[in-house]
Length: 179
Image 1 (tube, rainbow, N blue to C red):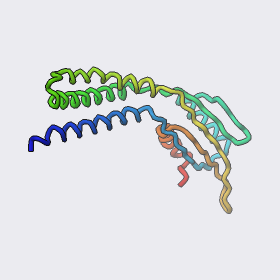
Image 2 (cartoon, rainbow, N blue to C red):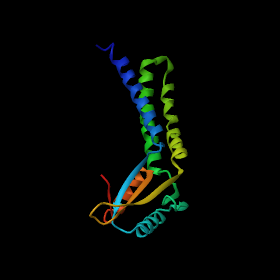
Image 3 (cartoon, rainbow, N blue to C red):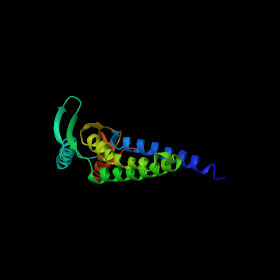
Image 4 (cartoon, rainbow, N blue to C red):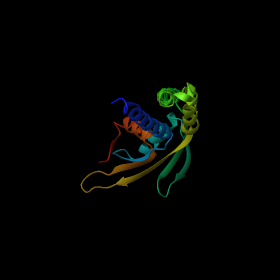
């Protein structure tokens, strides 16, 4: 029975290391989504409210297209210190586990595989370099007419999913998500 313990532990540790690698890589990935909101406010009032909201979130107006009622905002998203430290800590734990398994699997190497733990700050550095970026928010407002009802405004926002979640919470009393 003990003959299978080391290979199976090594195999599971390698799988966890692969998962950790993809988790770190995904921390810098863009997650652009689209959100549609319906509002009973007039178009100009809704656009002014959205402009004020994005100004308060440190986005700047970079382009307007009056023909399509489309507005583009741009802002710099800073990386998170907490996430950089968290990813480095996870990597240190993963490298320690892999180093311990390699130490038991290859006793000739001595404690040299434990040196893998020195690679853990690279995860935080990778995150820091990839997460700090300029993001765009594209807004389009159009009128939706329904028979027998007052016209509504449909605001379509294309942005990072975290920004859209915050926008949805902020506009809860003014606009509702379209289903």
